[in-house]
Image (cartoon, rainbow, N blue to C red):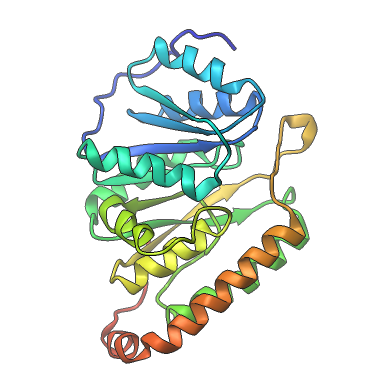
Length: 267
């Protein structure tokens, strides 16, 4: 991949909705992801989270020829949530109101970016959550494992309608999420996506679920996974124990809201 600007359809840059891609050692696949994202949206920001694979240099070169692409490089790896927070804080300072997060590894459907953005613009008070549709490439242990995380998220929000707690292709309202993350030290690594959805529901942000295909790429296809079953499952278990305890403490607030709630929004 060289640093030339990709061939793009004409589009005006959004002043409210930003596409944010955190990236850590995903190899050449991040370049394909960025090009696919830029073909669908303007602007796109990439936060390189301390990568050591040389992709930061190539991404910076790509951004030099594309005013719709910004690349921030963090000096050390701090985790997905920390990389997203870095982008959120800069976006809020520049007046953006919503961010669509997208993984750098090629699993998320770039062609659905405009549909997600349109859904968010129609309902700016909500968060737009991708609900993954798996094909045969999905590891069975990962599919079964996320069912437990989803069950916990339903319990923690009294079934508020989070379609999938772990799928990172989603749109957040920036100001609300920045405030949530500023109040506590968690949500900086793999625990970011599920805890962000739960805490935003607690703040009154409604989830809107949109189906989205997801594909797990093999190493031969350039797929890279940084998920570690023991480490990250321990992290998720600790997170859900915290959130379930907090749910009990929040019941005086959550229960009255539960009775007034309409059925979860679907799209």
